[in-house]
Amino acid sequence: MIALLLVALALPRQAVVIATPRGQTSIPVTTERGQWAVAASRLAAPLELTVALDGPRATVGLGGAVFVFQLGAPFVRVGGVVYALVGEPYMARDSLFLPLGWLADCVPRALGARYRWDPVPLRLEELPVAGPVTAARPAGAPAAAGTLSAGTRNPLTGLRLHHLVVIDPGHGGVDPGNPGRYFPDGLVEKDITLAVARLLRAELVRRGIGALLTRSTDTLIDLADRGAFCKAECDLFVSIHVNAMPAGRRADRASGAETYFLSDAKTEDQERVAKMENEVIRFETGAPSGATGPLGFILRDLQLNEYLRESAQLAALVQDSVAKVHPGGDHGVQQAAFMVLTTARRPAILVETGFATNRTDGAFLASSLGQHKLASAIAEGIVAYLLEFERKLAVVAPAGGR
Image 1 (tube, one colour):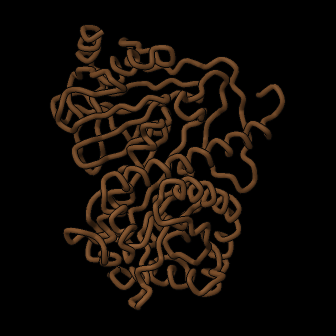
Image 2 (tube, helix red, strand yellow):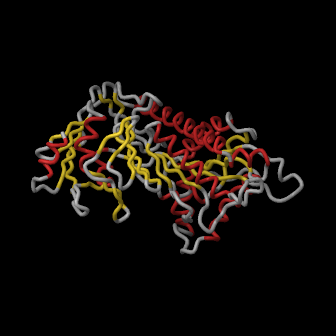
Image 3 (cartoon, one colour):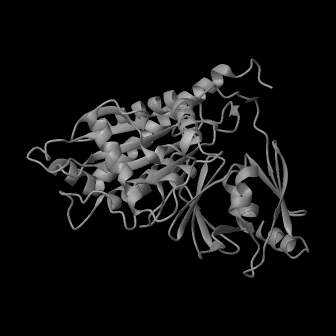
């Protein structure tokens, strides 16, 4: 296979053809670094490919498999197998480029029952799966594209469709979040949220679910821009935060996790939490984004209602899962007007993972074990929601498929 690839690459061709049951696409091939490579972003639509970047590591989801690359290293790992690459993955112009050899050799070897490579011409073909059932989208459900196909369930989750979750680690950069009264070693909220978010992304990818972080480093992202990461291909938006009580004699008594969805606050405590998290806007230096006045009111009202029920269901499933592993107790599902959720045009929740002002919660949140437990629990809640979503798709699918 490698020899055939090298022969094909010697030919004067500058594109690779991606052929799937959904159509055929020609993807440009670049040789700017002396190797044949394709932009991962160009493969996202035709192959329903997902990409998550974490420093020098790139995690790519394709066909239910997870490929882990190291930038500048000529190998890729999928499951417990390591494949050598002809070329190395690299970043250019804020885009990830993958060696063409990955498509030509690694993908067919790892997913031989689904993909076939033709070296002359350069062509990757996605083989059809028997028994497809095209599913319509129920009203108010997330826009997960794809088909339900018999016999293609993910063995870890039972899911059949490709899904993408946007994870938002709260705060960052000049905005530390709350100071973490009981966090050790100078940790603050922005450190905890990023740690949990990274682990959550890893947990989702391990389950075959695409995951994208709004920030992967210590930087500040405007509130309006965070939800905007959840675009057409996104299914869910999950923002991670740490709660805190105002100073007082009983400040350290409150403990436990709670999960919010976007709606009008019903209690003073809900208003307090929303105000605390919305105060990040004082660190933002750009002009306020989004519509204001009557138009802004209408748009916000549409957002509140379009995915309210789905967001509440997602919040309930995540909260139930988190409460089982949290030492501080169950504060239940809450609702409030969080600015960070207003621009996510999909089901969206905000998870308050515990109280930095509580000694037990603080130790739990700052520990590696606690962070792993939280990430795994949130992932399980997300999977439970997506399974229910796919069940709704199956119910509304036309009889016999199309």
